[in-house]
Image (cartoon, rainbow, N blue to C red; front, side, top):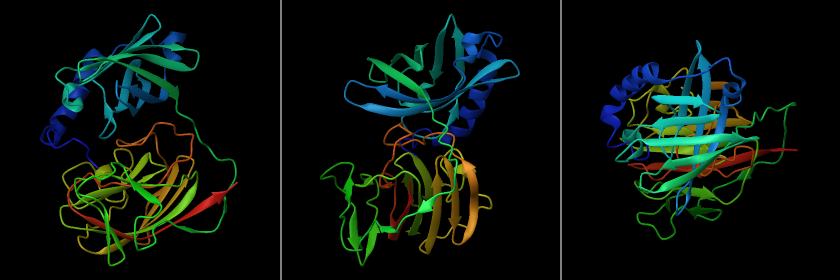
Length: 324
Protein backbone atom coordinates (compact mmCIF):
# COMPACT_ATOMS: atom_id res chain seq x y z
CA UNK A 1 0.00 0.00 0.00
CA UNK A 2 1.31 3.41 -0.92
CA UNK A 3 -1.68 5.57 -1.97
CA UNK A 4 -0.48 8.70 -3.80
CA UNK A 5 3.15 8.19 -2.77
CA UNK A 6 4.65 8.02 -6.26
CA UNK A 7 5.59 11.68 -6.23
CA UNK A 8 7.12 11.61 -2.75
CA UNK A 9 8.79 8.22 -2.49
CA UNK A 10 12.17 9.51 -3.64
CA UNK A 11 12.00 12.21 -0.99
CA UNK A 12 10.85 9.90 1.81
CA UNK A 13 14.10 9.53 3.72
CA UNK A 14 14.97 13.21 3.45
CA UNK A 15 11.52 14.30 4.55
CA UNK A 16 11.58 11.96 7.53
CA UNK A 17 14.94 13.28 8.66
CA UNK A 18 13.87 16.86 8.01
CA UNK A 19 10.65 16.38 9.90
CA UNK A 20 12.52 14.97 12.89
CA UNK A 21 14.94 17.95 12.86
CA UNK A 22 12.08 20.42 12.46
CA UNK A 23 10.11 18.72 15.21
CA UNK A 24 12.97 19.24 17.64
CA UNK A 25 13.11 22.90 16.65
CA UNK A 26 9.43 23.82 16.72
CA UNK A 27 7.44 21.48 18.95
CA UNK A 28 6.39 23.15 22.19
CA UNK A 29 4.51 22.07 25.28
CA UNK A 30 3.58 23.09 28.79
CA UNK A 31 4.11 19.69 30.33
CA UNK A 32 3.10 20.67 33.83
CA UNK A 33 -0.39 21.80 32.90
CA UNK A 34 -3.47 19.63 33.21
CA UNK A 35 -4.82 21.04 29.96
CA UNK A 36 -1.87 19.60 28.03
CA UNK A 37 -2.24 16.17 29.64
CA UNK A 38 -5.89 16.06 28.64
CA UNK A 39 -4.84 16.01 24.98
CA UNK A 40 -2.25 13.23 25.24
CA UNK A 41 -2.92 9.80 23.78
CA UNK A 42 -4.29 8.33 20.59
CA UNK A 43 -7.17 9.87 18.67
CA UNK A 44 -9.33 8.55 15.83
CA UNK A 45 -9.92 11.51 13.52
CA UNK A 46 -12.45 12.21 10.79
CA UNK A 47 -11.65 14.94 8.27
CA UNK A 48 -14.79 16.40 6.71
CA UNK A 49 -14.24 17.65 3.15
CA UNK A 50 -17.13 19.23 1.23
CA UNK A 51 -17.86 16.01 -0.70
CA UNK A 52 -16.73 13.21 1.62
CA UNK A 53 -15.10 12.22 4.89
CA UNK A 54 -11.53 10.96 5.35
CA UNK A 55 -10.46 8.74 8.26
CA UNK A 56 -7.25 9.75 10.00
CA UNK A 57 -5.34 9.10 13.24
CA UNK A 58 -3.24 11.12 15.66
CA UNK A 59 -1.05 10.28 18.64
CA UNK A 60 0.14 13.00 21.03
CA UNK A 61 2.80 12.24 23.64
CA UNK A 62 5.45 13.89 25.78
CA UNK A 63 9.11 12.94 25.57
CA UNK A 64 11.61 14.67 27.86
CA UNK A 65 9.12 17.46 28.48
CA UNK A 66 8.52 18.07 24.79
CA UNK A 67 5.26 17.51 22.95
CA UNK A 68 5.42 15.26 19.89
CA UNK A 69 2.86 14.06 17.39
CA UNK A 70 2.51 11.20 14.95
CA UNK A 71 -0.22 11.10 12.30
CA UNK A 72 -1.80 8.86 9.70
CA UNK A 73 -3.37 11.09 7.07
CA UNK A 74 -5.75 10.38 4.24
CA UNK A 75 -3.24 7.85 2.85
CA UNK A 76 0.24 6.54 3.55
CA UNK A 77 1.86 5.50 6.79
CA UNK A 78 2.19 6.86 10.30
CA UNK A 79 4.66 9.75 10.30
CA UNK A 80 6.01 12.33 12.76
CA UNK A 81 4.72 15.88 12.44
CA UNK A 82 7.10 18.85 12.28
CA UNK A 83 5.05 21.12 14.50
CA UNK A 84 2.54 20.62 17.33
CA UNK A 85 1.59 22.89 20.23
CA UNK A 86 -1.02 23.24 22.92
CA UNK A 87 -1.71 26.69 24.26
CA UNK A 88 -4.66 28.19 26.07
CA UNK A 89 -6.59 24.94 25.86
CA UNK A 90 -6.24 24.78 22.08
CA UNK A 91 -4.36 22.30 19.89
CA UNK A 92 -2.48 23.18 16.70
CA UNK A 93 -0.50 20.80 14.50
CA UNK A 94 0.87 20.88 10.95
CA UNK A 95 0.98 18.23 8.24
CA UNK A 96 3.55 19.08 5.53
CA UNK A 97 2.29 19.83 2.03
CA UNK A 98 4.63 17.21 0.55
CA UNK A 99 2.65 14.52 2.37
CA UNK A 100 -0.73 15.98 1.44
CA UNK A 101 -0.55 16.77 -2.30
CA UNK A 102 -1.30 20.35 -1.35
CA UNK A 103 0.15 23.72 -2.32
CA UNK A 104 0.48 24.63 1.34
CA UNK A 105 0.93 22.85 4.65
CA UNK A 106 -2.28 21.68 6.28
CA UNK A 107 -2.71 23.50 9.57
CA UNK A 108 -5.07 21.81 12.03
CA UNK A 109 -6.51 23.89 14.87
CA UNK A 110 -8.99 22.67 17.44
CA UNK A 111 -10.11 22.37 21.02
CA UNK A 112 -11.24 19.68 23.42
CA UNK A 113 -14.84 19.82 24.59
CA UNK A 114 -15.64 16.99 26.95
CA UNK A 115 -14.35 13.88 25.17
CA UNK A 116 -14.50 15.34 21.66
CA UNK A 117 -11.76 17.09 19.75
CA UNK A 118 -13.01 19.39 17.01
CA UNK A 119 -11.68 22.12 14.80
CA UNK A 120 -10.81 23.27 11.32
CA UNK A 121 -8.03 22.91 8.75
CA UNK A 122 -7.17 24.49 5.45
CA UNK A 123 -7.99 21.69 3.03
CA UNK A 124 -5.78 20.91 0.00
CA UNK A 125 -8.67 22.11 -2.20
CA UNK A 126 -8.30 25.61 -0.75
CA UNK A 127 -11.49 25.31 1.32
CA UNK A 128 -11.91 25.18 5.07
CA UNK A 129 -12.58 21.66 6.32
CA UNK A 130 -13.96 20.56 9.66
CA UNK A 131 -12.42 17.74 11.67
CA UNK A 132 -13.31 15.78 14.77
CA UNK A 133 -11.44 13.35 16.98
CA UNK A 134 -12.45 10.75 19.55
CA UNK A 135 -10.13 8.83 21.82
CA UNK A 136 -9.05 5.57 20.22
CA UNK A 137 -10.56 2.66 22.17
CA UNK A 138 -8.26 0.24 24.01
CA UNK A 139 -10.22 -2.76 22.68
CA UNK A 140 -8.68 -5.03 25.32
CA UNK A 141 -10.24 -8.47 25.62
CA UNK A 142 -10.77 -9.95 29.08
CA UNK A 143 -11.09 -13.60 28.07
CA UNK A 144 -9.98 -16.03 25.40
CA UNK A 145 -12.30 -16.26 22.38
CA UNK A 146 -14.62 -19.10 21.49
CA UNK A 147 -14.50 -19.75 17.77
CA UNK A 148 -17.56 -20.20 15.55
CA UNK A 149 -17.71 -22.14 12.30
CA UNK A 150 -15.35 -21.07 9.48
CA UNK A 151 -16.87 -18.85 6.77
CA UNK A 152 -15.56 -19.07 3.18
CA UNK A 153 -15.45 -15.51 1.82
CA UNK A 154 -14.52 -16.36 -1.80
CA UNK A 155 -16.37 -19.01 -3.76
CA UNK A 156 -13.77 -19.43 -6.51
CA UNK A 157 -16.31 -18.53 -9.21
CA UNK A 158 -17.30 -14.88 -9.03
CA UNK A 159 -17.40 -11.78 -6.83
CA UNK A 160 -20.45 -12.86 -4.83
CA UNK A 161 -20.18 -11.42 -1.32
CA UNK A 162 -17.90 -8.58 -2.44
CA UNK A 163 -18.27 -5.18 -4.06
CA UNK A 164 -15.79 -2.84 -5.73
CA UNK A 165 -15.15 0.56 -4.19
CA UNK A 166 -16.00 2.18 -7.54
CA UNK A 167 -18.89 0.52 -9.36
CA UNK A 168 -18.20 -0.02 -13.04
CA UNK A 169 -14.55 0.95 -12.71
CA UNK A 170 -12.00 -0.17 -15.28
CA UNK A 171 -9.74 -2.06 -14.86
CA UNK A 172 -11.85 -4.25 -12.63
CA UNK A 173 -11.33 -7.25 -10.39
CA UNK A 174 -11.82 -10.60 -12.09
CA UNK A 175 -11.92 -14.33 -11.38
CA UNK A 176 -9.95 -16.68 -13.62
CA UNK A 177 -9.29 -20.40 -13.09
CA UNK A 178 -10.60 -20.15 -9.54
CA UNK A 179 -8.32 -17.25 -8.65
CA UNK A 180 -9.32 -13.73 -7.63
CA UNK A 181 -7.04 -11.22 -9.40
CA UNK A 182 -6.33 -7.60 -8.53
CA UNK A 183 -6.88 -5.12 -11.39
CA UNK A 184 -3.68 -3.12 -10.92
CA UNK A 185 -4.31 0.60 -10.31
CA UNK A 186 -8.03 -0.05 -10.01
CA UNK A 187 -10.70 -0.11 -7.29
CA UNK A 188 -10.56 -1.82 -3.91
CA UNK A 189 -12.58 -5.00 -3.29
CA UNK A 190 -14.66 -4.83 -0.11
CA UNK A 191 -16.43 -7.72 1.59
CA UNK A 192 -20.15 -7.32 2.22
CA UNK A 193 -20.05 -8.84 5.72
CA UNK A 194 -18.58 -7.20 8.83
CA UNK A 195 -16.68 -8.91 11.61
CA UNK A 196 -15.22 -8.08 15.01
CA UNK A 197 -12.59 -10.61 16.19
CA UNK A 198 -11.52 -13.45 13.92
CA UNK A 199 -8.96 -15.80 12.46
CA UNK A 200 -8.33 -15.36 8.73
CA UNK A 201 -6.68 -17.80 6.31
CA UNK A 202 -5.63 -16.37 2.94
CA UNK A 203 -3.64 -17.86 0.08
CA UNK A 204 -1.99 -15.32 -2.22
CA UNK A 205 0.41 -15.12 -5.16
CA UNK A 206 2.18 -11.81 -5.77
CA UNK A 207 3.47 -11.02 -9.24
CA UNK A 208 6.78 -9.31 -9.98
CA UNK A 209 6.87 -5.63 -8.97
CA UNK A 210 3.33 -5.85 -7.59
CA UNK A 211 1.58 -4.58 -4.50
CA UNK A 212 -1.63 -5.24 -2.61
CA UNK A 213 -2.80 -5.71 0.96
CA UNK A 214 -5.46 -7.24 3.17
CA UNK A 215 -7.39 -4.77 5.33
CA UNK A 216 -8.73 -6.22 8.57
CA UNK A 217 -12.05 -4.70 9.65
CA UNK A 218 -11.37 -2.37 6.71
CA UNK A 219 -8.83 -0.46 8.87
CA UNK A 220 -5.54 -2.33 9.38
CA UNK A 221 -3.52 -3.39 6.35
CA UNK A 222 -1.35 -6.50 6.30
CA UNK A 223 0.99 -5.84 3.39
CA UNK A 224 1.59 -7.96 0.27
CA UNK A 225 4.32 -6.75 -2.10
CA UNK A 226 7.34 -7.47 -4.25
CA UNK A 227 8.15 -3.83 -4.99
CA UNK A 228 9.00 -2.23 -1.64
CA UNK A 229 12.44 -3.59 -0.72
CA UNK A 230 13.83 -0.06 -0.36
CA UNK A 231 11.03 1.06 1.97
CA UNK A 232 10.89 0.61 5.78
CA UNK A 233 10.42 -2.98 7.06
CA UNK A 234 6.82 -2.31 8.15
CA UNK A 235 6.02 -1.73 4.44
CA UNK A 236 7.16 -5.24 3.53
CA UNK A 237 5.15 -8.43 3.11
CA UNK A 238 4.01 -9.67 6.50
CA UNK A 239 3.99 -6.23 8.12
CA UNK A 240 1.11 -4.10 9.35
CA UNK A 241 1.69 -1.11 7.11
CA UNK A 242 3.60 1.69 8.78
CA UNK A 243 3.32 0.21 12.29
CA UNK A 244 4.58 -3.36 12.71
CA UNK A 245 7.47 -4.98 10.86
CA UNK A 246 7.62 -8.74 10.29
CA UNK A 247 10.28 -10.46 12.39
CA UNK A 248 11.74 -12.49 10.93
CA UNK A 249 11.10 -11.09 7.48
CA UNK A 250 10.75 -13.94 5.00
CA UNK A 251 12.35 -13.85 1.52
CA UNK A 252 10.28 -12.28 -1.24
CA UNK A 253 8.60 -14.79 -3.56
CA UNK A 254 7.26 -13.58 -6.90
CA UNK A 255 4.86 -15.90 -8.67
CA UNK A 256 4.62 -18.42 -5.81
CA UNK A 257 1.61 -19.27 -3.67
CA UNK A 258 1.96 -18.25 -0.03
CA UNK A 259 -0.30 -18.30 3.03
CA UNK A 260 -1.33 -15.95 5.78
CA UNK A 261 -2.98 -17.10 8.97
CA UNK A 262 -3.95 -13.94 10.83
CA UNK A 263 -5.59 -13.63 14.24
CA UNK A 264 -7.09 -10.28 15.26
CA UNK A 265 -8.43 -9.85 18.81
CA UNK A 266 -9.27 -6.25 19.62
CA UNK A 267 -6.18 -4.47 18.31
CA UNK A 268 -3.81 -7.39 19.06
CA UNK A 269 -2.60 -9.17 15.94
CA UNK A 270 -0.68 -12.35 15.14
CA UNK A 271 0.48 -12.97 11.57
CA UNK A 272 1.73 -16.39 10.49
CA UNK A 273 3.25 -16.38 6.99
CA UNK A 274 3.88 -19.73 5.32
CA UNK A 275 3.64 -21.44 8.69
CA UNK A 276 6.09 -19.11 10.47
CA UNK A 277 5.05 -16.47 12.98
CA UNK A 278 6.26 -13.05 11.81
CA UNK A 279 4.14 -10.89 14.14
CA UNK A 280 3.40 -12.41 17.53
CA UNK A 281 0.46 -10.89 19.42
CA UNK A 282 1.45 -7.25 18.89
CA UNK A 283 -0.72 -4.16 19.36
CA UNK A 284 -1.76 -2.19 16.28
CA UNK A 285 -1.60 1.46 17.44
CA UNK A 286 -4.18 2.81 14.97
CA UNK A 287 -5.69 2.71 11.52
CA UNK A 288 -3.43 2.49 8.49
CA UNK A 289 -3.69 4.71 5.43
CA UNK A 290 -6.52 3.68 3.14
CA UNK A 291 -8.84 2.68 6.00
CA UNK A 292 -12.55 2.80 5.22
CA UNK A 293 -13.27 4.70 8.44
CA UNK A 294 -11.74 5.49 11.82
CA UNK A 295 -14.44 3.88 13.98
CA UNK A 296 -12.11 1.31 15.48
CA UNK A 297 -14.63 0.08 18.04
CA UNK A 298 -17.01 -1.20 15.34
CA UNK A 299 -16.97 -4.43 13.32
CA UNK A 300 -15.73 -4.05 9.76
CA UNK A 301 -15.20 -5.96 6.52
CA UNK A 302 -12.23 -7.66 4.97
CA UNK A 303 -11.07 -5.63 2.01
CA UNK A 304 -8.42 -6.33 -0.60
CA UNK A 305 -6.37 -3.54 -2.11
CA UNK A 306 -6.58 -3.11 -5.87
CA UNK A 307 -5.32 0.45 -6.26
CA UNK A 308 -1.61 -0.41 -6.38
CA UNK A 309 0.35 -1.57 -9.41
CA UNK A 310 0.80 -5.08 -10.78
CA UNK A 311 -1.29 -8.14 -10.05
CA UNK A 312 -1.82 -10.30 -6.98
CA UNK A 313 -3.93 -13.46 -7.03
CA UNK A 314 -5.99 -14.81 -4.12
CA UNK A 315 -7.70 -18.17 -3.81
CA UNK A 316 -8.74 -19.63 -0.44
CA UNK A 317 -10.09 -16.85 1.82
CA UNK A 318 -11.65 -18.34 4.96
CA UNK A 319 -12.61 -16.41 8.10
CA UNK A 320 -13.38 -17.97 11.47
CA UNK A 321 -15.24 -15.45 13.64
CA UNK A 322 -15.06 -15.31 17.41
CA UNK A 323 -18.42 -15.98 18.95
CA UNK A 324 -19.64 -13.81 21.81
